[in-house]
Image 1 (tube, one colour):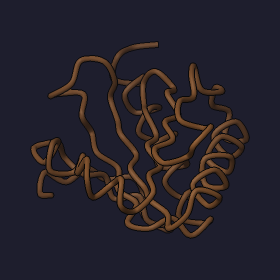
Image 2 (tube, one colour):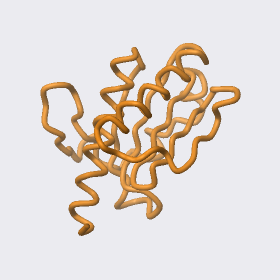
Image 3 (spheres, helix red, strand yellow):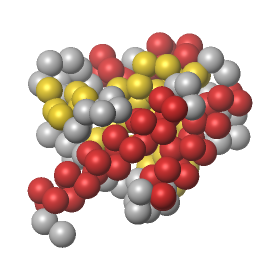
Length: 132
């Protein structure tokens, strides 16, 4: 698979993950193309929820829908025990599901503010914008 088609597939699966998170009532879901500023992955999906049970539910739904879309299972999952910051690492994309207050503390959006955002909303084809 060429690097362009791999990057496109990463964005497509990240959009599936974002829509899955949103469908389970995640708050403020964003998708960032971080590949140009971070060498270890292409895309971040960032979402949050008001309690640890919902964090787990969102992560489980993301994992289920990514597999249904023909994607892989995560290479590793971190944070499932306390579910304050649950990370699903798929290699080419990473899904972060935070408790609201933990997300505010780490503020990944500010950290990666120079990364383009992907329009992932239902009905829209994945589109990348350079404005955050």
